[in-house]
Image 1 (cartoon, rainbow, N blue to C red):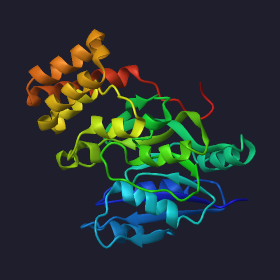
Image 2 (image 1 turned 30 degrees about the vertical axis):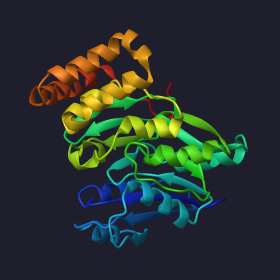
Image 3 (image 1 turned 180 degrees about the horizontal axis):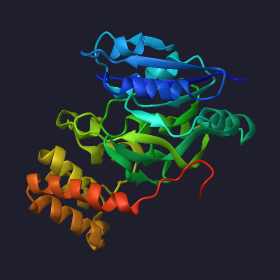
Length: 293
């Protein structure tokens, strides 16, 4: 059996890391290692990791999620690599075996595997949102559950494209496939998720995607996120969207998201998005488990 490495990047994750490590160790594929990198945490993340049978690497300083993802790939001893963020969990113990089976018996030119996933929040049963994105680049913004044949990669800390940047390197050499069931439950905890921290928004998400893709990415729904987390970037991102993709002016959703983001005060918008997530969306979404359609 080929060896597989489950890679966990962790930064100030003392509250959630144990559950993620346990989820990785419970994978029933026998020849596996769990590799944790503590990216310069200032809390007890490393102490939590040392309670488990994992290989722990300590970054002397905080290097950022993108560079840590690349370092995990380099340090992994397995032929295949699965990522799991330090606040997320696998939904099925057989997933690691599924990854090895797909790589070993599937098309030999497949180098990266995507997946569906759902969001949950502590204290709220079920899902509060799902990701059914079938674009391998955009769906990899969340690293959890992404699987790869091991190879040398470069990392970047440009916001929103940390994992897509790694995936883009694979697509120059390999094809991709996707598990169309919810491989991972991704924990949503404002202030804990990277994308919910105001300090994360140091540059233009639109321009980073443009540089990576070579074409505009319609970031319409992201306008709401920017208003809530980085309002100083909002008008710039709307202007860039129109400049590089004038056809968005013909799309009603663009106007809807742009106008709501521009006109609704942040304190109201945050309550509205929370109400939608917990009172409406959670009743509309459906978790897809292994073997279901």
